Length: 499
Image 1 (cartoon, rainbow, N blue to C red):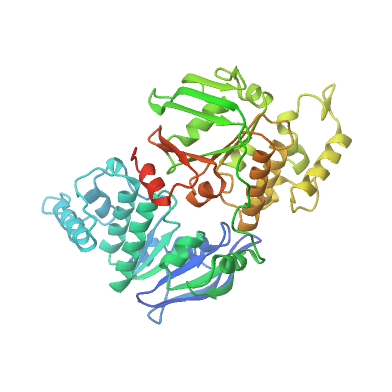
Image 2 (cartoon, one colour; image 1 turned 135 degrees about the vertical axis):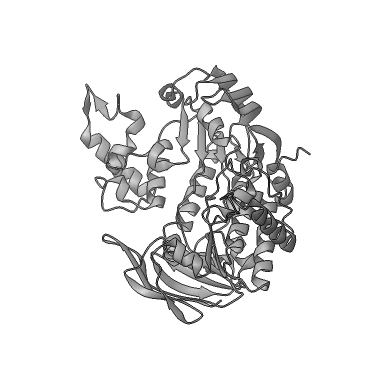
């Protein structure tokens, strides 16, 4: 089925998320929609899938104009969507999820689960999925759950299939499997739109590439285009994609984590008997698929988790039992994985956000009063040093782009005398140009002799920054390996392999 989008414009108030976008995807083609987070890719696909209605433009399938009142109309027309966050009911079986919303019944009003099981087996056999129709979704690995999403779409006769950032929660091996599935689907005639910001994946699987920046189509490219060429289209300027760094010169052990176990509110172990060291002047990267205990580990290091056993020792002093404020005062700098809710106050100005963890005393507060001149001087200096693009230091942080917000967080955390720097998902949701800047500052922090922990689900980022890599799986560290370890080995470790 041929897909055409003509002049699609979607506004949210004064924000133009999609600005007169044209896109043509031929039948049986894998067409990649490439762009930074916030470029308008997902908004455009939500228009296509009937979740949003565009103010202007039209959608055509095989030359016939479509009018979607909602997602049901788009599904009926043959459009399916595999979302980044799976739309599955964990306690339901595969078969139950497949028929959800499209239930058929037997005599007596009972669900016809046999028909759903048959459909699962037929599609599984066709693509080699090896799925048990009666398995509960919550018991399946995330890569297998994604296959359930694909079967849902195919089982509803989707001829146009949209994959929205589908590799965010997959290991490298699961990503490779998904690429193979996409190729097989395309060869069978399915039209595929693949939304991503990962250059390596684009070049591996796409037949054609359309690049979107700030809601507009800024160019098209072939898969033969270099990463540098694609990145320049995404950002609008040349970008250094590789991290330039000299070999680490590690000093003595600065941080010791011993037999650390973290419990959730129900008493379940989310981090299980983890031990590792970090040396002064090195970057230890913690890799793994999201949801394997990395966030809870970081929260324990920062004093935000109280149900812990084991020990965390920084320069000879135990941090277990300390409050977050006490940990920060001990010299720990922290970039949280969600800057908007954990790292910044959106309504506060840039200057106010730069003093958030130093708001109780000198140099910014004296006798309970903010020393405005001191703060403004400091803020102007840091805005320049960290290249924060903003009208001024009184601009509300919530009005800045993701990359500039992250630079404010970095400026604050790296402006103190540090004994440990922890950066969790430091480049999530920011543009390629800002990623380049963030990576340089992290390496500079290492080179100043500070021990650094980087937690990232982006394997390319881990490989680029790390001096050593610790891989987490289901709350444990399955191994700590050199930075030169291959993607294949890291991928197996992320899937639970210990050797």
